Length: 244
Image 1: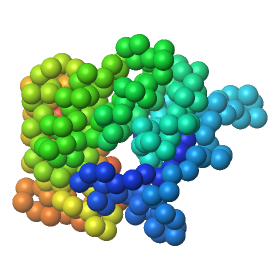
Image 2: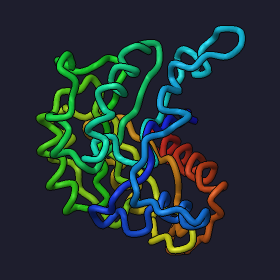
Image 3: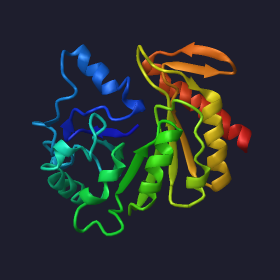
């Protein structure tokens, strides 16, 4: 599982996938307002921190999910982002994954020396339904990046990605369901359909979590959050076995 680095925290809901945002849900349990965006006081420079032996706390070859309690391209972070890019660039031995719903802001928020992308950075765009896929992915196709992923998470309906996948500009599609008490359903048939699309165009596929409200073979399963990942892993193994 990827390590987490949250240089800032908090976000604003901007589309259908945000309705039951897990950050808002968890912050509410702590009497915290997730709509207030704040720079981390202790972990902003986490990738640069070392232990008493002088070794990086985030070891070389680690994978780091970046800003998953906010959005890396959020307007409030404009004054902090250049420093965050500098930290990312200084750790070429670490792979950073940056996921966003604000794809229209990506190009103007890239560092000046970005070129075709930093080799240690993958950028992902979330497309929770067909409407968002059709709006965001044509914009994302034009964004220069060394690795580009599509996140259909939380998946809210059957989503056709074929016209985007056949462009050859996307490296991976990650699908996941919604978590916690008010989770909308994730239908396994939707997952299988995207898996088949990825197979057709030779795009890597990952089903990372079932969500808490999972439908498989017409039966609804209420899954505890800590079991969503293991259940999705089993489903992935099933998909791969049937495809081989």
